[in-house]
Length: 445
Ligand code: AMP
Ligand code: GLY
Image 1 (cartoon, rainbow, N blue to C red):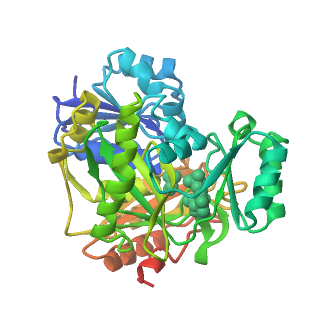
Image 2 (image 1 turned 90 degrees about the horizontal axis):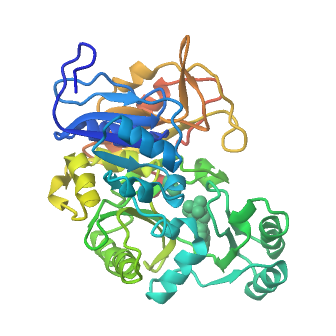
């Protein structure tokens, strides 16, 4: 490989392709670029932030704009770029079998097979796996017609949760406060086909209340490395008001999950999932992200499994890892997790504040110029990860619902939080909104 531009960078090492276009992928790309074993990071299709000339201590990051994420396009790109490793950011390509196609082409991939990705791709599959392996999850019924759905909802009464089985970009879950609302939700899925095939099967389940937690484990299908617990904030506005979103902010490690509780989550939820998947002939390789609800009594319930990093959880987790993220992922791709490739920092915490576009999540507005990115990046401990951004003739403009994920580390959660908000307030674009209470449940505000 020849050096590009004038910036000095490593000429030997791993060439890594990251698939996706969010702040998660920007954070992964930066983490990989900082890894000693990386020569170049390519992000497809990426965003306005996923470009860097590299330097003495960082590999360059390049973007392949307009790249498709279907299996054929990904294999062709990986071959053309002669990459040594592919990281798949979002769930949709995994559920469509991109990891299988790469593996068949002899290209190392960090991410589960299509069969293993059913843990996220089918909520009914996840619930039945949990039932088979004694994993604590909300009680549930699986229905495929409206009469059965209505009977089940009436039998349970409100509150009750209605979930479309398949992938719905985060819109397929309704926590219904009344029987009528639940029936309406089920009708939208089963009768009105609002989610197409994803809504032909519906899970109706008990509503669980408590404190949410996101726990990620890196796994080769047998052994696992549990990452620090993170706390996402799903609702759009302060005080958990407004509609559900992909996630408006995170803090990690979350003090709401003690080391004892984390050990229980590993023993009672993560380990049986990974062992169960292997025993059933669909070993899970990659990152397993358990979405949990911790009840008042301190019992962890599995709400969802995701087969990829959370976003914005990933931005915080990458900020808490030292060492060689590329080698960690490559070891999983080779089939033998090397947990010594990274160390979880014990001297810092991370807070992420997401800046969203006007109208997000219902109908985000695009094309607004973004100001203050440089000033924000100057705040100590801060990295501004891009999500829905695009480079226009006059600079960076908004191009999606979640626009930026301002990520800060500090020696305490309070310090990380203060830095994240100082940086977030330095950025402006028309209609920008962000939650001001990230960290509230950790007692920081
Ligand atoms: P998802 O968008 O599929 O990640 O899940 C959406 C959100 O729905 C979760 O993060 C929880 O806040 C909520 N949720 C899912 N299942 C339940 C449940 N059984 N009880 C209460 N809330 C739930
Ligand atoms: N932040 C939650 C998710 O990525 O699903």
